Image (cartoon, rainbow, N blue to C red; front, top):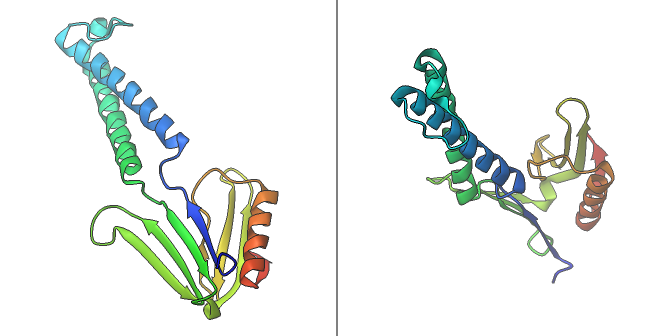
Length: 181
């Protein structure tokens, strides 16, 4: 049965980088907010500095703004980690001749995204590699109606050899051709 069904697990927002940036933004934002409040109330709220000497307008006000913005971003990242946005799996089922792509989204009516494609409508497996300032290395499901469905998660770009191996294994499993996009 495992020769007929393949399931690839997709990691969502519960990655080390999100934990790191969420914590970094929370600590930095709280520090900036406390520095701004210290300059307003003239009471030292930070143990490592003395921001009471800052003039509230404009330095203290700007510090409070940046602190609030940073804390807001850290809360947003924390919520996406809690809800595990983007996680799911790709299932390739030869017995049912179906390909299922399942992802978690934000809570609401469309919390779980389920895309189902018949195996007969798939033309090939495509690889797209673009280098430069924002490198992209992705595997796509190329359909006969010219749509290209991304199969790889959003993350740090994988090595080219690893990406090609994954795409070749998938194309071999589905008995499809592999093409460069």
